[in-house]
Length: 337
Ligand code: NDP
Image 1 (cartoon, rainbow, N blue to C red):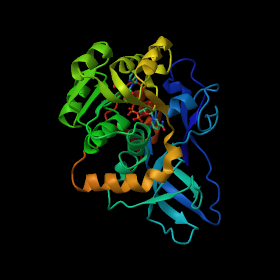
Image 2 (image 1 turned 180 degrees about the vertical axis):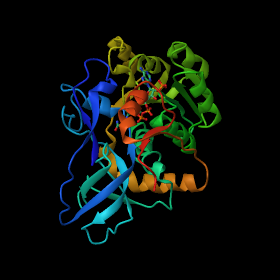
Image 3 (image 1 turned 180 degrees about the horizontal axis):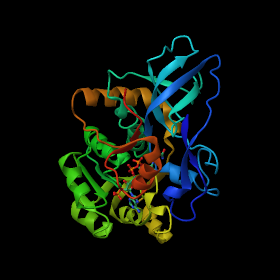
């Protein structure tokens, strides 16, 4: 099968030449295993850290000469697992390849999904790890309360478009966000239910927050770290809460050091800052799926994906995601049938 492999670790920014598409043999199908043809693959910022050798990660790092992997959704072509017939759709971890052999019973193996409930891409986006990250961050980590003013960074991305809408549906009074460029900011207000949005590249976020949330914020959903986190610390009200989800601004050569002494704000205002990894919160998944599937069925929520076609274009999709080339969830399609 064709797989995307890492050729070498990037020196600074990853480049197309760091990846290659190769033909690799599939293992024979054993008892309890499934042969799956991938239809969609998730492109995630966490892959950036996994390209490095030194970066400590919550999952394994990629190795030069070996295939990449990641969340994907496919259709079962052959099955040696009773109860999982060919034709069913499964979500799993062996993306970045056209076909994969999976253990049906592993927790990291195949998770069956219902294409009647939502379109296939939604199962990797709003109803997938992405939407779940937004839900966990808001409800459990930031303990969102009705009436809160919420600020989300990278708001036009996959987690950000979900977080803004969930916050509103969960009772937030005001939801504001930042994104790169005026087009994304306009979309946030028009399509994704944000009350106000600001371009973090055009103006210091401290100034935009003073305008968008003049009375301060109660919750900051942090996807980017750095200067935006510092700005949020100043905008938070006493007792405010920060869900530390990711640090998009800290990848690569462009990162700027921010004075850690901004944290005095946390002392003065008794703030709570809490990092989280979504997979530690699987107990919330049934509640999340029921809640979000309900909102989708009622038409109360908008879902958007940026879809790139073809396995050979998957590395380009990752580079594009890191540069902000996506609105909503970034996916690679390998043929949806
Ligand atoms: P997104 O769809 O949000 O894509 C990443 C976005 O980051 C880009 O679209 C870009 O948008 C923005 N970005 C890139 N560089 C910068 C920068 N220097 N400063 C500010 N923004 C930047 O990705 P996801 O929704 O998949 O992930 C969002 C965040 O959530 C990431 O930090 C990710 O690591 C984290 N995450 C954490 C999980 C957890 O368990 N803790 C699980 C899943 C995701 P723009 O054009 O606006 O710059």
